[in-house]
Image (tube, rainbow over all chains, first blue to last red; front, side, top):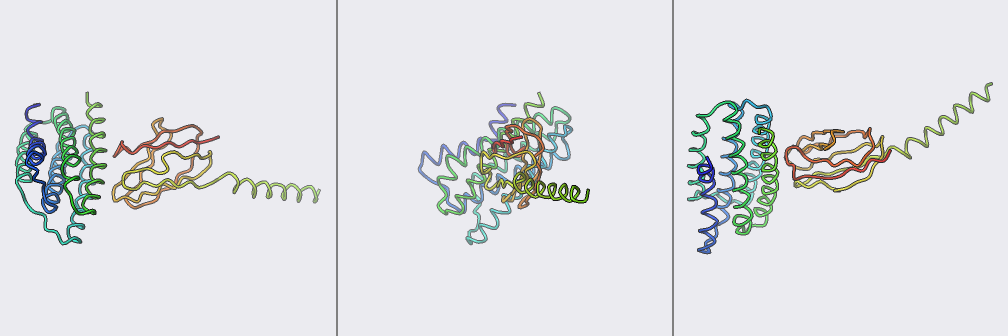
Length: 173
Length: 106
């Protein structure tokens, strides 16, 4: 369980370590793609939770995730359009999507309270990883001021989600 | 008798006229970019709070002691009247890192 949880966030950690070590910063089009992908991943996980979760707080949390991440991603799309930037697919986005798909398949096999616990635990770990990547890599690497500012708003939203997920996790115990 | 009545009415009107503007104020609390401002504000029982949500996200103002729980849809303003005195810490249920304090005098 813990190994799988860490695996789900490995791409972001690896990216942070590798990129910083080589001094190779992701470009704005890559950052936009990574941030948008991270949002889509959480929306997909939340939609699965809305149909599978049995606990009402878990379901409500999943609905909050869909609403907020869709709102953030809409802002991101509006911004790249305005800046005439085309988000660029990259290895980090690909690894993130692949690992998220694996996690989704793994969660799909669970049900009842076991599913609820596993989903919320993954939400805590996932938001923690995304926040780490935003703070240490994506925000410092962003060169466009508006992109940087949107990422900073995203960080505050996701820090809120992490706290919210931790509260829900504590209630499940 | 007539004089007494008029006096009472006038007195009541005057008291009323004085009481309403003097005591019931409207306080604005703004939620923007996941920040509540002012972080601390003083009010009185009977005052109205205008909760102004400038974000594209829904927020709540949820009292830790259970005294109020207001939900603000994205880009909307919601008003509520304060009915109970006390120093109330509140937060957003969706983003619990958003926190502030409302000091409500009796």
